[in-house]
Each structure stands twice: as C-alpha cells, then as structure tokens.
Amino acid sequence: MGVLMALGTCALVFFFNPAQHGFYPRCFLFELTGLFCPGCGGLRSAHQLFHGHVLTALQFNALFVLSLPVLAMWAAQKVLGRGAVPAAKPVRSFRLVWLALAIAAVFTVLRNLPAFAWLAP
Image 1 (cartoon, rainbow, N blue to C red):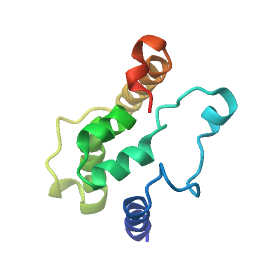
Image 2: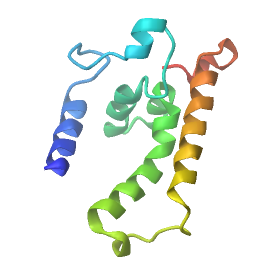
Image 3: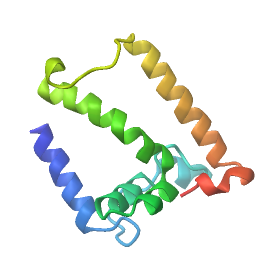
Image 4: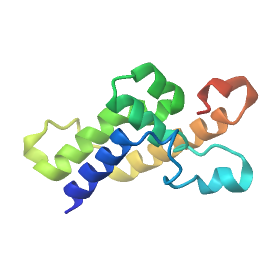
C-alpha cells in the first residue's frame, strides 16, 4: 500500500509542476514567518529531477537532491530487506538522526541568510 502511494505521489509530481499548480500544500513555516524550511522547494526540485533537470533541481533544494542517494539506500533496505542491499558499516541510528537534524538545521539557517540566498528556492 505504501509503495502504491509513493508511486502515485511521484506520478502527481511528475505530471503537475508544483511551480504552476496551486493544489500542493504550502509550507507552514514560510506562510507564518517568511523563512524557508529545509523542505521548501522540495516538490519543485523533485519535479525537475523527474524531467532530468539536475541543476535546476539543485537550485530549488540542494539538500533534497544531495540526500536522495542516502534516502534511496535506506528505502531499498526497508523494502527489500537488509541482505538485498549492501549496507555501510553499521552506525547507531540515533547518531544518524542527530547528524541529519544538524545538517538540516545548518541548511535552514544558511538558506535564510542574505549571503547564502543562492540556497533559497
């Protein structure tokens, strides 16, 4: 069921550009504060990736694009099982969570600073 929902969502993002269609959810943080969250531009980035526009996707959300290989490995391990996908050296999961949160926090702060406006979607 989850795989079907993921495929349906991917098809929706592929066929309907989030930059041109208003039925996609708006970012709550941006609506309230005018600040970009780490996910802002992620749907637009995904749409561009689906159409082969990697540089444009990076401009919308570099963190999303650069994290895709890690997320793909994690998802493959969850769907196919641990033995089916080669895994890196085991690391305690709480360390990875804290590392991901730290990276997202730094990315969020930087993309809202004038000197790093190129990170904003």
